[in-house]
Structures are given as structure tokens and as C-alpha cells.
Amino acid sequence: MSKASAKLVDALVARSTRDGGFSAVPGGPADSESTALAALALHATGNESVAPLDWLLARQRKDGAWPRTDAVPEASWASAWAALALARLEGGASREPLARAGAWLVQREGRRPGLLARVVGHLTNLDERLEQDLTLVGWPWHETAASWVEPSATALLALHALKERVSLPGAEERIEQGERLLWDRMCVDGGWNYGNRRVLGEVLLPFPDTTAFALLALQGSSRREGLDESFAALTRLLDPRASGLSLALAALAFELHGRKAGEIERRVAERVDGTGTPRETRSIAFMLLALSGGADLLRTAS
Amino acid sequence: MRMGRRDFLRAGLAGAGALVACGRRVEMPDDRRRARSRVAVLPAASYAVDLRDLLLRGLAFFAPEVQGRRVVLKPNYVEFDPRGAINTHPRMVEAAVLAFLSLGASEVVVAEGAGHRRDTEYLLGASGLDAVLRERRVRFVDLNIDHVAEVTLPTSFTPLGRLWLPRTVLDADLFVSMPKLKMHHWAGVTLSMKNLFGIVPGAIYGWPKNVLHQVGIPNSIVDINAALEMPRLAIVDGIVGMEGNGPIQGEPRSAGVILIGDDFPAVDATGARLMGVPAERVDHLRWAGEFLGNVAEDRIIQLAEPPARFQQEFTLPPGFATLRG
Image (cartoon, each protein chain N blue to C red):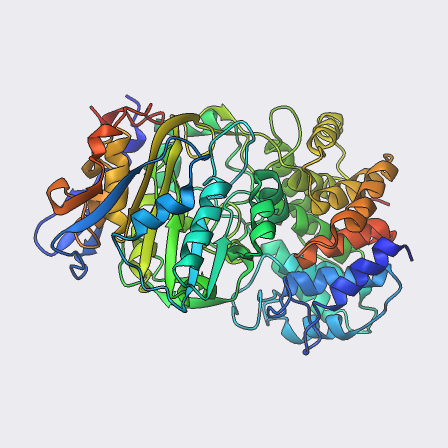
């Protein structure tokens, strides 16, 4: 294990909680996203601890979703990461939790504009100004919200992983429409931000982390148009200000699309050696996945 | 005929005991307004002046009780653009940290829950705030992933009823909203009240905080502000503001001013007027001015400098011509 990876493992372990989970920052409560990502990252380094998987299994809701934390019981977008981690790492006999998680993800939809909003959108020319197909459905952050890039991308990754393990009626249709939504939300010159191409007619620029998430989710997409532009946009966005999280996600996206990621991985390691480990657990986990050959855990295309 | 956004956001008094906000009838909340509120208007030509000293002079008008207390500063780091004026300047944040420490605060925490970007490490580093935090050894709390508590909203401008809010804010001995003086393409203006969108945790509500947009931005602004009970101050960075298509894509506009006050609607009404916007025409200010704080000019005492000295006509956001019409 490299020196950088060892540092990241130490930082990750320091975020483990007494109940077997992982917190987003030191001293916080365990949460589903951090626990799932930590489990994936530790697995990539050869650590086969079952504690985070047990934490996740113990907290799955009856409807198949996961809460964000014990204190916030409502179904969270982070369920996608929990489902993906269990699908990839949980080798137990029972596939029932996976089927339940998959069923929840298949039925979870971003809110479509209601009749009044559609009328207002038409009268104010909103759809045209947004340059978005508002009929497409992906996944929301919150049950009452619209579809956005990052939760849609993570749900797509999870569905791909789940359907390798269990039968998931309806998954293919959701994957197909989810991919269409991501392509629809691509920024004008490639790449993705949180999910708007334009606001009030003004072009919005992409972000590196959301661009990498979308590219990870589109590994298996049959559409190639826009792919080169988006990788070019991602490369431009990896300027000296880019965070360790963005560098790590970009390295994973390049690798999983069969593109050279070595230079970006080197920058991830340099970041750890130079400025230390980031504060947030998910950043540490993605950096560890990038440096420890963990990309296959996010692979969707055979 | 095309219907404008303003037509949908129009609201007004609907008779005794109730307001109508975006077509939603709201029972008139308890009147929390003071007889009069005070807002300090302080000249600051640039970020190179002694901002700590300037803030101390402004804070002296309000004599906040901070001895041995924990102060939470909430600047605006919703997004970053090196060409723009989106953020509360890191030097302003630094000056506030130093000012409150010199007044005896036991701890000053900087806290933000960015609205567009999840990548806080990038935002802090690129904006220069991280360098200030490290130099001054100030703790930063990412409100998007903080411990939360469920709060029952005392007002019903939105149908939300309850919101998860971060403990760092709810438990603050003094909460300081530190916005930038900006126009806003959905809310008209964004100041200390709108800045509180950044306390709503993204880990629950997402990036952007779409849930708040769906139930009405001005409505959400009022409900969130009405839910806070701890002592509060506002310090507005108006040294360089933003005009036009704010809060992200507008143009920088020098205004050379800092506002300080302990009544957010009064501070924001003053800020709106400095930008050449009649405060009563901004929905959330008009509604807040009915019960939460003072917005009417004759109920605000302007301290230090007369606001007229700094008043300019900031370019309005697209679609907001009626703010001055």
C-alpha cells in the first residue's frame, strides 16, 4: 500500500463510530452514505471488515430505503450508496435486502412539474429558457424534489450493481430514462453541474465532481455523442484549484471509460502527501478508491 | 400574452389577521417588531482598510453579549467564480472573527452550507476562505452535513410545517448572518434573510435546495427566519456588491459600505434601498415587515452615516423591472 493510501486508511478509520458505522466528519453520527463509501474504500484496500455492512443491514427500512442517520429516519437519497455497497460486498445468502433496496430505487422518482407549474412554464416560456426536457424522470435528493444529476447518477450506479445480483422488474426502463435525463442535463459545452444547463437564458458552467459522477453513471450508455466534450470539460476543470474529491472522481471516471487516468491518480496522491487528508469522509473514500484499484466496484459495463 | 414571474409572486395584505403570500392565506403571526430598529451604515472604501476596527465601531452600537459565548458566523459561499463577487469577502470573515474574539467570545465558528456545490473543500480553497481559517485557527462547520434537529416552523408561508436545521446554528449563543449585498434573480435581493438558505442542510434537502424553491423562495425565506430564536446580528459586505443577474452571474458593483444591525428585515430593507430598490416591493421583506422586523423607513434609525450617501441604482435582475417601475 502506498504512503498516501495508508494515510487515507488511517483517516477513514478515525471516522468509524462505536456502532460500526462511519461519520461524515470526525465526531459526527454515523450516516448511510459515509458508511457505504467507507466500506467500499476499505474493501478496495483488502480490509474485509463486516461492521459497516452490518450497520447498513441493521438500518434498512421496511420499504427498502435507508435513513440518512439514526436521528433522521426518513428515506434518504443515500440509499443508493448503501444498496451499491451491499450489492458489491455483501456475500451473504439472503438477497432479500438487495431486492427490497432495488424495488425502492425503481419506484423512487423525482417530482415532475404539476399541471399549474406546466401551465406557468408554458406561459413564461420556462422550458425553452431552461433547455430541459421536464418530462424526463430521474432521482431526487428529497422525496418532494425534482430530479438532479448526482442522485440520479448514484441511483444508476446502484441499479446496475443490484441487477447483477437480483431480478429487478422495471430497472431497465428506469436506467434507460435516467441516462436520457443525464444527457439532457449536460451543460452546453459538455460536463455537468447540479442539473441545470441554463437559468433565465444564461448558460451555466459544469462542475468537476458532478461531471465525473455523470460520466461514471454513463459507462454503459449507448450514446457516445457528448462524451469527448465532457471528458474535455472535466480535464479543463481539473485546474490547480480542483479538490481531492474532484481529482479522485475524475480518475475513476477516466479509468472506467478506458481512458488514461495515471496523471490524475498521481495528483490525488500528491494532494494527500502535500496538504493531508480532506475533512469529509466521502472525499477520503473516493481518493482511496482511486488509489487502491477500487474502480471496479463502480464498474457498470461488462 | 406572456405572464411574468412577478405576477405569480405578487402578494399583499388580505385584511385583518391574515396575509396572502403567493396565493396562500397565512394567519398573521405574532407581531415581533420593536417600535423602532437601528441599522449602522459604515463606509469602507476597500477590503484593505482596517475592517476589524471598523466592525468593532459598528458593533459598539449594538453591544452584543459575547463574553464567554460561542459566536457562529454564516457568510455566503453558495458558489465560487473567480471573476465574480459572489462571496462574502474572506477578509470580512476574518475581521468578524477577530472582532468577536476581541470582544471576549469563547469561540468563533464559521459555518456555511453551500447551496450549489457539495464540494466544500473546493469552495473554501478556491475562494481563499480556507487560508483565513487556517491562519486564524478558526473551526469551520459544513452545515450541509452537521448534526440536525427537527424544528416546527412557527409560521406557514410555506406548507413545510417542519424543517431539519443544523445544531451548530440552533445552539449558537449569537448567530451572525454575513451576506453579500446582491441582487437575486428569484428573490429580488439577497441579504441577511435570504442568506439563511445556507443553513438548510443539503444532506437532507439536496444541492440545490430545491425543496425551498418549490414551496416559494420568498415564502421559505420568511418561514426560516421566523423559526430562529437565538440572538442574532447581521453584518452585510457591501464593499463590493453584485448587480444584475445575481446571486451568481451578476456583475461586481462597488458600493463601499458595511451594514450592521440586529433586526434582519431592517438591515435588509436598508440594503435594498442602498441598491435603489424600494424594500416594500420585495415580497419577503414586505411580508417580514408585517410581523418579523421593521421594514418601513420611518421605523428604522440609521446610525453612523446617512444611507443616502451610498445609494446607487444597481442594475435589476432580469424580469424585475417592476421593483422600480
